[in-house]
Image (cartoon, rainbow, N blue to C red; front, side):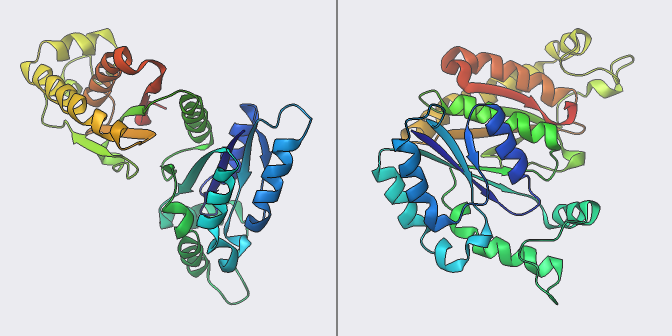
Amino acid sequence: MKLIIVSGLSGSGKTVALHALEDAGHYCIDNLHLELLPAVVNQLRQSPHAGYGEAAVGIDARSGIESLDQFSRIVDEIRAMGVELQIIFLYAELATLLRRFSETRRRHPLARQGIPLMEAINLERDLLAVIANQADLAIDTTRSNVHQLSQSIRERVRQAGRQGLSLLIQSFGFKYGSPVDSDFVFDVRCLPNPHWQPGLSALTGKDQAVIDFLEKQPMVAAMQTTLRDFLHTWIPRFEADNRSYLTVSIGCTGGRHRSVYLTERLARHFHEYHGDGVTARHRELS
């Protein structure tokens, strides 16, 4: 049996993630009290009904501090059953969480009379730290919409079904903020910028005219070689450390030309070595 525990800060997209997993064929349970999890998992394992071989459970701070203190023990108990367990933790910047609650007019699950929303968010962050610290995959949803998060979850689950490390190479624009859930962040703003070339500004690094321009630049070729060699050196070290996921982010100013071009080239190169375990994503083109 395969089980995914989905947790995270309220407003960061836990429900969206569970819906994406349900669409992918997982049997999903939301807001399960943590102490009930071993019994539920055992029941699913023994159930004669089909469809319980892959399940996902949403766990949040409503389990209480006493239960969350037992998280490590409960995870060990589930793994001892022979269950293949993965933990996904979602989070977002404070300002984004405040805005989302304001826009949806939802009440924070930990908010009590007289406790401000910001204090409830910080309390929840502290309570869930034990889960965040053991997460196999942490996803920052600050700049993700519903569709982007759903796609990310589906891609990660698909990759988790294969052996070996799953490599995500993503482009982004520094003007919109750096992705904080990256293992490596590379700045390629030093390279010639197609934005200033006549007729190229409105295009992207996927368009042939931009590709032709960048392929003529020796600095771009040198950067590509440097990044490729760096990753070839260090990816095996992450695999040896039993890492399931590696995220490499490549940023230029707007995230539309140079970073997109290099992301596509590197993803294509490493696909030869890791097959379907390599995914290219372009944050500013989504």
